[in-house]
Length: 114
Image 1: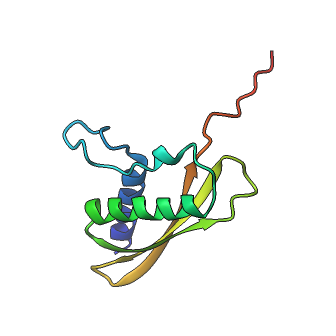
Image 2: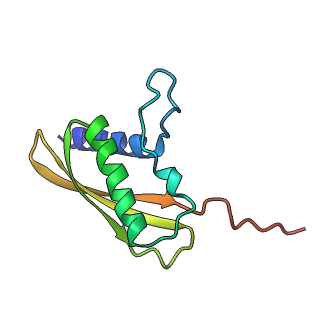
Image 3: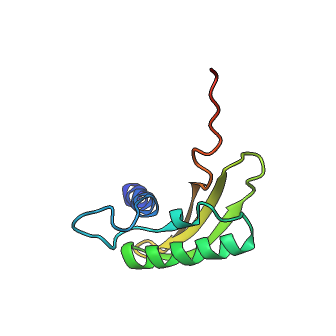
């Protein structure tokens, strides 16, 4: 059963990191959390992330039932929000969680040493 849990976690990571339209044969596959890249990190962003992730996992990962997304304290590192996803695996009736780093200011603080 460990491999099943690992496969599901990898599947969730793939869903979250794939933009809709990125896969030729499945243009609707993915999770469009990157549309939130320029949003302010506040409670509205948390609610929007929860909504988008919930619907993507409901659609593309039938082996789980989704419970919640929690934003872990992100004040220590600028430009990244750590999302703790809590979900249950239906086949084993076990609860799991994973942490997914969402880089919302990726590549915007680049300095050149010339």
